[in-house]
Length: 287
Ligand code: PAF
Image (tube, rainbow, N blue to C red):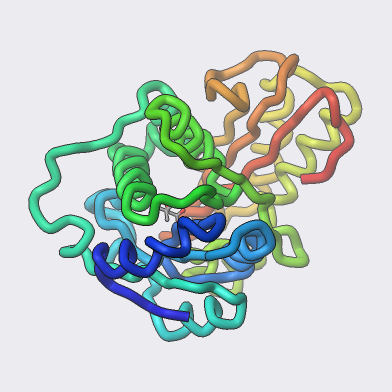
């Protein structure tokens, strides 16, 4: 496995690989965990060359967000990549990715506006721009994202479709701890008490899912059920609990088509998100 820091090196290393077979990209911000491992494993199974990018992208963090304290440990991440059979790690500096004031942005209208977009202005513009840059740098045949960041995955798919980018996007299922908490790099900010309470996000989604399986279709009722579960923990502050169309991200009153149930909750200064899809074709599926 090689670790490179410059765009030129990535292009050099991949020139031959691209001709010889499929190149898979797993874009990450490092702090790799089992969720990332599942993306890398999926890439390893399907691609001849697997590239992992590790870049804590400043343009997707708001001024009061956790950019400075975001966990960074390239050595630990490289060990994980090595163990999972990654071929190339691209770990650029901010200067390499943004050598001058950035004047060109990728903005995805509508899809970037609700849910996390409404609370994190500019976040999806930063994500969309850096992912488009990574797609141009690595030129993968396929890129892997996690369902945990459901809105991000929908936005990335839309960029690829709208801009005719020549790659496939694969979205892999959420990986959970045994008690249901969705695995995230930010879980390490939680203290023991917050960690115990954080499982309520999963419990809330599971409760909504059970009511859906029982035939409840009105989103107001499902949202009330989730809020009730979350309200049992004084340690959690709900940012939003919403149910939207899984494709357009527009709010729905009654579930007739696949719907995205999405939560954002604060435990102390840590923001946690989670989601599930409710689908009439599969009403009893688990979270
Ligand atoms: O999901 C993430 O880790 C980031 O948003 C991504 C896709 C690597 C872009 O910085």
